[in-house]
Amino acid sequence: MALESAYNPNARSRAGAVGYWQFMDVVAREYNLKIPQVKITRHKTKRGRVKVIRKVVGKKDDRKDFIKSTYAAARYLNDRKRNFNNDWLLIVAAYNYGTGNVWNAMARSKKENPTFWDIKNYLPAETRSYVMNFIALNVIFHNYEKFAKNELIYETAPADYSSTSMMQ
Image (cartoon, rainbow, N blue to C red):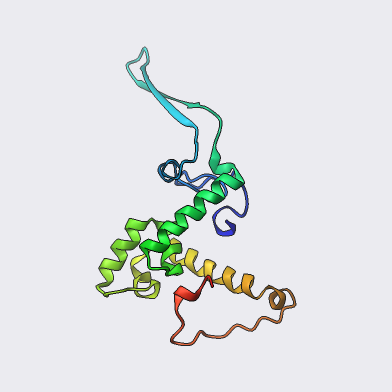
């Protein structure tokens, strides 16, 4: 939520994602969140031009409800855990870029069981940055006392570091 909306229920992305967890309309509906419907009508003007009128029908948007959207995000992430073999860096990449897009990047890597590090060059810069920010937040959250006292030492991870241990 910190990465998605900075805890702002009224956050709206350029792509149209809304709320605490930045759900797009299709995914919000898939996870049973109620969202306002947009009714689009077209009228011809006297000059023969088409005028498009968008009217929002209903005001309830569960994407802005902390509890409902958080439960939906938890279900969504749990589903992605199964899709990506509990690899949190791939899960986070999929949250940002879409499951199908990450699967495509995995296929393009031509590796049997690719990790985020294997596919990162097949992902857009925004998604790569998003995953790096996720890693940074995890380091801070798991070491907050040291971070708050400015005692957190940043070292290079060992070569055998696994992204599946990220959320443990």
